[in-house]
Each structure stands twice: as C-alpha cells, then as structure tokens.
Length: 219
Image (cartoon, rainbow, N blue to C red; front, side):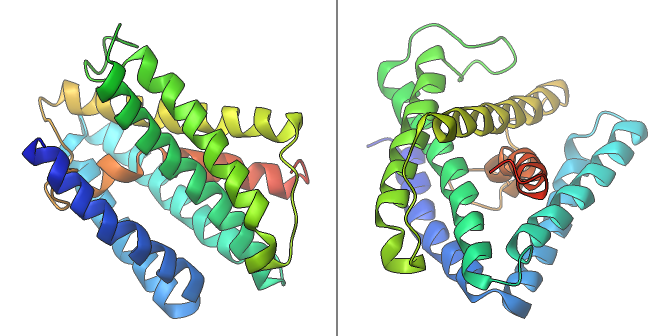
C-alpha cells in the first residue's frame, strides 16, 4: 500500500470517530472544537490567499460558514433533530470525499478539470454514488439512534446530489487557490491529508447551503 494512502487511512480512522463523538457531545466541547478549527482554517487560508483582498473575503466567508455550522447543531429546541441534521450533512460530505478519492484512484480516467490534475470524472461520479449509498444506510438505520425513520425518495436524492456537487465545488475552489499559490496542501496538520482546509473544503460550502434549506423548510 502506498505510504501516503496508509497515512491517510490511519488519520481517517482516528479523525472520523473523534469528530462524530465531539458532534454528539455538543455543548462546550463541540463549540471549543469549532473555534479551534476556525482559527486553524483562517491561518491556512492566509497561507494560500493570493492577496489581502482575497484573504479578507475568505475571512468573512469562513467566519460566516463556521457560524452556520454552529447554528445547524443548535437550530431546533429538539437536540435529537439537530444531531440528526448535522450527521446527515457531515456523512454526506465525508462520503463525497471518500468516494471521490477511492473511485478516482481506482478507475482514474479523464480529468474533471484543469484546476486539479488529481480530480477525475470517475472520482466525481464516485462521490455522488458514495453519498447516496451512505445516506441510504443512514436513513435506514436512523430509527435506532434518533427514533426517526426517513425514506430515501427521489426528492432527497436530488438534494443529496446538489449538496455533493457543492461540496465538490468547494474542494475545487480551494484547489484553485493552492495551485495559484504554488502549494500542494493548505498545511501539514493531518498526516496523509495535508491541512485542515484540505479536509473541510467541501464542508464549509455544503453546510451553509444546508442551513438555507432547513431555514426555508425545504428539507
């Protein structure tokens, strides 16, 4: 196994359960974790910003995005519903990322765009497929955790595909800034992954869109 893939796998096996436990715990632990992630993200954004203007707009966006991430975890008075929604979008983004990486590495094929040479059409399709499959199982077994049963219907699949597209677009946008700044990664915080922004580039775009959906009762 490639050394980078091995590091990435080990990091994921530690990070994903840790983040899920923090999200479940909520309250001050979640809020503190979110604040630390925001500070790190701002530093990494500073590293890849092209100039002061792009840094300023990125700073505003990151603060706005992290605020909405906080809001989603605390949107309703029902903690179970907040947790259900948060896990929904988190699983969607994680499966989009993992599906794109694994399928893209396995099948390869034509590039998706010149922005990132590692992004392929097969990887993008893998992102869509993985997000739908992951959420199918999440909905199927959600009753055991949230006493809430959701049927994966056509409307939900469309919403999943749209949010997965936004997550992928966020990934590409950060890749564009890295490329313009002649940097491979936003940092070296996470072994095998790079910086924090390398891992949450899709999340910081997908969560605000999801907040819009729930605030307008569209989901």
